[in-house]
Length: 211
Ligand code: TZP
Ligand code: MG
Image (tube, rainbow, N blue to C red; front, side, top):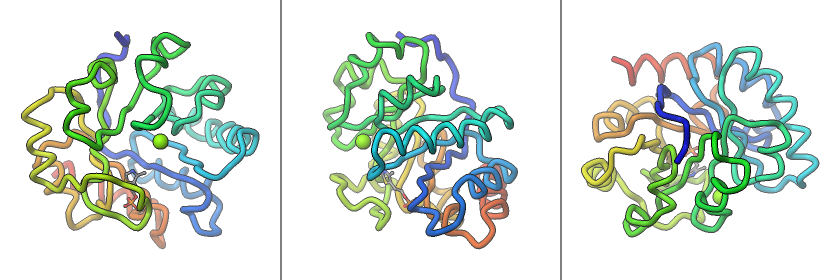
């Protein structure tokens, strides 16, 4: 089991250079932190390991400065190399049971739930939080399986006490309803990365979900 016992995060930014569409992703991340983001994940699907590592090192300087935990999507090498706070994996990635046995004993492990059956497996039991992926279909990630919707999220809430991070097409207008359906935290890409003013977007979202 993990030593991580609490999940005091409500607003989670998932960021990549591509999703920031030509803007400096480090500036976007820093603005988002100033606006109230509690946790950041670097998710670089197309980068080589070295490119990913270089981006992660630069982002970690910022997250460390503001004492915000940094999670790495999928890449065990990068997560270990930068001593990341944690790693986020899905069904087709290195599984949580394998990670726990290999240098991730005391790092946060997030695990995406795409099928209800996953709730019963050991991977779920040993993870620190579950990603409800996607709660609503989104153009940001199209290779998804189940669109959970608020009803699916409510059902999962009844079946587990694990911290639930909802992701997928979450915006200012639906953020509160996602929290009310049982999410502990919302994760967003475009609501912050594509915002004209990422700091303001993060600030508004945070206020909305804490209301
Ligand atoms: N996993 C499930 S949906 C998604 C990820 C990484 C993308 C969410 O992006 P957006 O722009 O907030 O809908
Ligand atoms: Mg993955």
